[in-house]
Image (cartoon, rainbow, N blue to C red; front, side, top):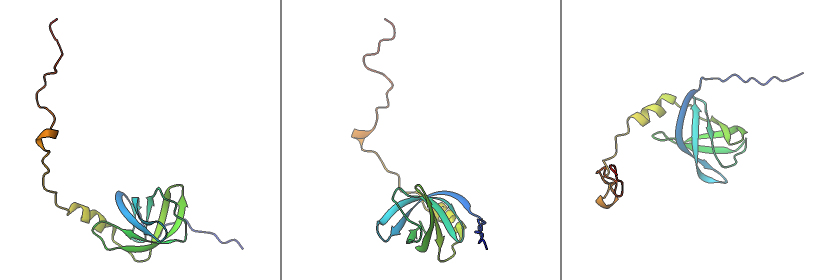
Length: 125
């Protein structure tokens, strides 16, 4: 008897490009790029080698840390099944609520000149 593996997802994934961090048991804390997210999982990219079956913690901005297991890997792309459901709208809401940082003023010595005159350029020769 053949066991058929279902490739249907239990919840719809929402496309998202989001920088986050992953705490890996062997690699420590590494930067990842989240490509899509749903209530039960996420897909991302990481330059470090991760293997299916490894338990990791995902550190999302403005959300509590979430545990999950890496379920697949293809090149630098991977998928994580989360142990607890999250609301994908909270990820988006968290980024919109962040207030703008105070304006940074570039020191005078490092500002580009405002005048448009180019020394050494002759127009009417």
